[in-house]
Length: 167
Image (tube, rainbow, N blue to C red; front, side, top):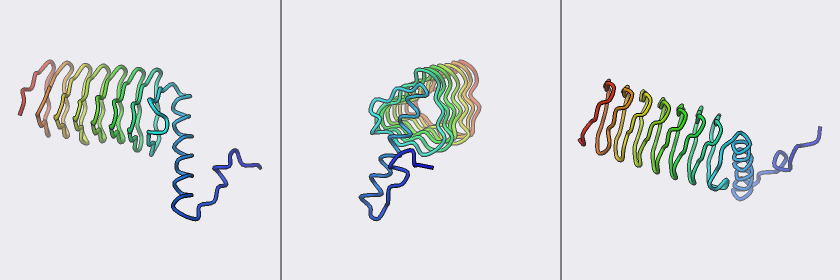
């Protein structure tokens, strides 16, 4: 059976060749995302390190790293320099620049960041806003609630339509 591409049979004898093969694999994975419905700001500047599924009209900006099982539903927008690991993001949600999401579940029409961190156990219901420099760990955030800036929410349950002040 002939190889589908030269990438599959390329030899790796030094760090330069390893980098070339990895670049080819990154390009192939980026192409797969675009064929599945994602728009990538620059296909050369995304790193896909797992099983990533995308819905229609997903936009991913530059320098994003997607690790493990990541699901980005229809209309999700991911800003530059974000790291998303083992997370599910709902329809129409926007992840602003420089955010880290790790084992998080984010419902539809949410806004995260910029500079937000969602740690394991974070569950956000619809239309939640987690703003700049907010960290959430092992917490459930009710529909319509907000933590706009400079806040830590840990091991908590925040109800519906709550506005959490800074600090």
